[in-house]
Amino acid sequence: MTASFLGEDYLEIRDLTVDFDGFKAIQGVDVTFLQGRLHFLIGPNGAGKTTLVDALTGLSQGTGRAEFRDHDLLTMKAHEIVHLGVGRTFQTASVFEQISVLQNLDIAAGLHRRALGLLLPRRKVPESVEQALETIGLSALAHRPAGLLAHGQKQWLEIGMLLVQDAKVMFLDETVAGMSTDERDETGELLQRIVGDRTIVVIEHDMDFMRTYADFVTVMHAGKVLGEGTVSEIQADPRVQEVYLGTVAEVVSNG
View 1: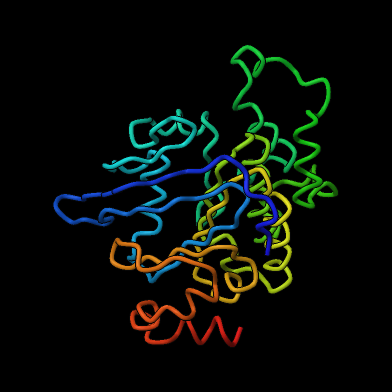
View 2: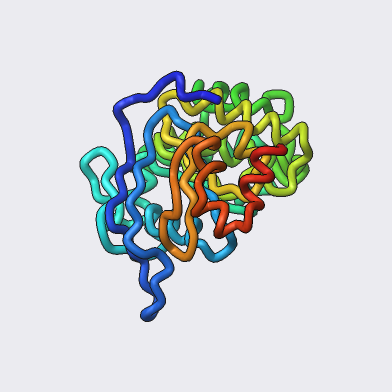
């Protein structure tokens, strides 16, 4: 586990509610995501995990408050949230499959370039792109079309695209779903390498992955926070055990 560095950045959410025509998908959620900590968000399907992230990234309308760097994300549009340094991945990797890994990263890096700069030819690969390629382990595949990457590599490319955007808050939605054991381990190690000066929140159903890499866990159920704590604390929480009929505790305990 990481947790060796906890910085000053944080995303503080208070009384977050998301209402869809009278159905409260999120009900008064309070949670704080800290910099330098791999924070896992778990819960059964329909618990509200993705809806919570949608509200924090401008894709759903929520009420309450979500403060990051003196801004309330709930009052901002999606593109403003991205420019503030909050990014996300989706369950299905959303890379540009017809162009190369390098070009995907270069386009993502253009987020903070002026419009005129986007029209000018690039004389060399930006340093941020080179660093991202190395960090995500795809330097040797820089010129390969993204569509030819393995499943896990596409997920790493998406994380690389967040890196070149200098995202300081990353929401990763089921990043290791469908990955091999080796890919899953490489992904966990990648997250540990980059979390130091970032706030990383992983939405996950893979309990073994959570057990191995989570510094802190928030469990959601029926749109509310059911419990929070370290993996061992969550394992011992009787409320969590009751909702999951012991499955979470057993999987966490047995690996």
